Amino acid sequence: MSTIFEPKTITSLLNLMEKYPDSLMYSSGLEHILRCREKTVSIDKSIIYIGRIEDLKKMNRTERYIEIGAATRIDTIIDKGKNIIPPILLKAMKNITPPNFKNLLTIGGIICTRNQRTGIFSVLSILDAQLEIRSKSSTKWISINNLFSGNEISLASGEIITKIKLHFMDYDISIHREIDNDFLSEGPITFSAVMGLAKENINFVKFIFSTSDTFIIRNKKIESDLKGQNIPVNDKLAATIISQFSDHLDKKHSSIKTHRKNIIINTLKWFMKESYYDY
Figure 1 (cartoon, rainbow, N blue to C red):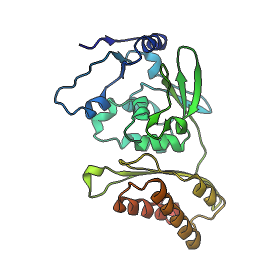
Figure 2 (tube, rainbow, N blue to C red; figure 1 turned 30 degrees about the vertical axis):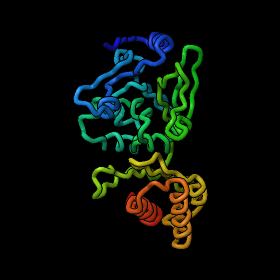
Figure 3 (tube, helix red, strand yellow; figure 1 turned 90 degrees about the vertical axis):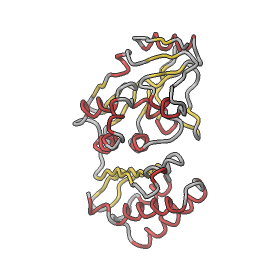
Figure 4 (tube, helix red, strand yellow; figure 1 turned 30 degrees about the horizontal axis):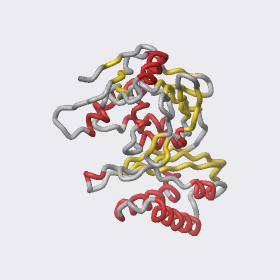
């Protein structure tokens, strides 16, 4: 039988993590339950339940940023932060299905899921969310874009994410789309983007695709090439960008099936040529 620990402070949590390094960190346990193929969920290691640590469930706002505790549930963030958090993130959170998962999933759990990067992870990446990493001996902040190397999480033994910080960003267009397809077992493709404009010129742009069979798809060179260009993008440049992005998919994400690649390419075309008129 597993031993269950229920720390009430972050300090107590870090002490337990040091004493039981192979323990399972547990909030709702949804990811573990979904991965389990048996009718009865079996856990053969010590469990550290973090749902009683109030400091991991706080939300704080300043003039420049908002901080969200890693154990804050998605429905709480939607309710308390609906007038604070960036609309693109709010939309991604509201799109979680099935809807009842919102009162189970925590933002830290979503970030640390090893098997796939979700639409919420993509939005946080676009917004360059910062993560507070704590251990018994140190506290540091890292970009969410540095959290994973491939599918390996870059946390040392004894480290845990305690907060997510989002600096308020000025942009003119934000997009989050979940594109369903006829292959239900594959799940949606998500597209997230933010764009700043100076009149009709692109001041900056960031965009990411995520799919269920790979992690996030991003090309910073193409983002840089679009800076200073008119919106909508002219036909010649759009064709060049599409060709470059298609090559990027073939080289870096060759496991993506052809029909899903076509969805991604067509969405990018829409983004460069038509999204300006829709927002």
